Image (tube, rainbow, N blue to C red):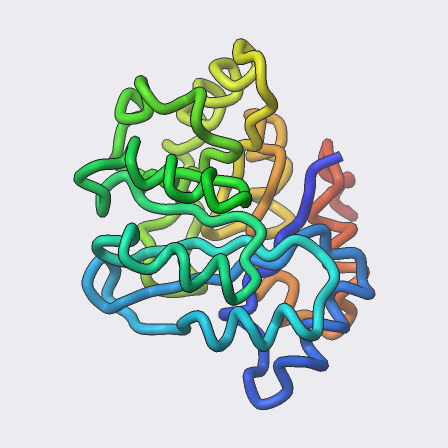
Length: 222
């Protein structure tokens, strides 16, 4: 079954510990931490201190998505803070191979993210280094955007490539994930879905998480 990784960017930061514990208790598989520096994407969010705080409140995998320039300068800080998986953007890495090696040598899982318009061919020579490929289904920087359907064919292509490898590689999709887009992403081959307001913005978080895991989608009431 697909894994759900709620993005804490949509959580109530005035009660972050409680929010983390609630979604974990509601069936979240991972927690997704969107790290933005205001340069790679037009927003500024969190740093290692927030990751460290979340780590104290959670027992599930912490998935740090670094949307920052020169991530090689900062991956060690996020790993030390408690990240179990560190994902960097291909668009932000001059020496992607070196950055992935640095993450793997630190003993955690390594991921690579691609923006919607970035072709999958950019990963041609690093597939054997990654544990996860993150396909953005919105242009990153802000929550609440609509899922870009053109990304579905890229998910299918990534899924086929991942299945051809000797080691397991998760295909993660992030952006505009809700009860309508989730089944499409799962059908295309997604194994991990990042969800923000469609989990944290719901009163019943357990019901919201289970709804995202449904494939095919439940029939609509007439």
